Length: 92
Image (cartoon, one colour):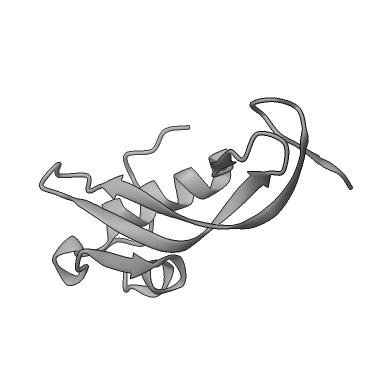
């Protein structure tokens, strides 16, 4: 299945990129390396699908962010133990 870029509608592929994310409490930003991304070969845009964005935001809300340094891999972030089973404040 061919992937189309959401920005320019050019040809894109699945890959990984580094992203910077503000913690839910607003205290600082962190780098998340190896984050699943869509990478466009036409416009060079790299972006995360909505599902990945939600996954990151939920995980950051549910873990002890004091355990996270300035940088963490996506895989390590998703493996951090959760303080709650799920985001009880997400009503979507």
